[in-house]
Image (cartoon, rainbow, N blue to C red):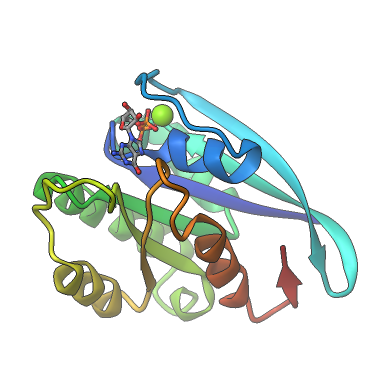
Length: 173
Ligand code: GDP
Ligand code: MG
């Protein structure tokens, strides 16, 4: 089909909604509004045609398990976000990564685009080093980037890198 579905997972408060709003609307808000599930659509280029990039914002690790399974099985690519200010938010990505691996199948994993993202890199209260984030991503065979939804740092680059990881079609923003 002409849809390319990207699902965003991560602990509550790491900036999933902020990162998506920054990407699709170019805005940022200071308030924390909990999410159940929302999907945003962007038109992108795919094999020299237009197609729709669907970005699904989730409630993260506390999502209803059945909803999480459905999002994973429907998703083509994944963004796993933690906050560089929270060690536990990186730890919360482990079971999410394992669920993706279990649902997609270990053999399929090398062809599933996944970016591990350290958000809030503008914040001085860092708990997770860039090296640890990178090491975690590499051990999972995923890409890695640090972003700030607040300053907009690396937000476009995140999506560019994710789309470049897709080998079945040639996609770009
Ligand atoms: P979610 O639960 O993962 O969707 O997190 P939100 O997007 O609702 O963000 C949680 C809080 O972190 C909000 O108060 C945001 O303003 C703040 N936040 C999100 N991204 C950033 C960022 O890149 N830098 C800073 N300093 N704060 C951020
Ligand atoms: Mg949210």
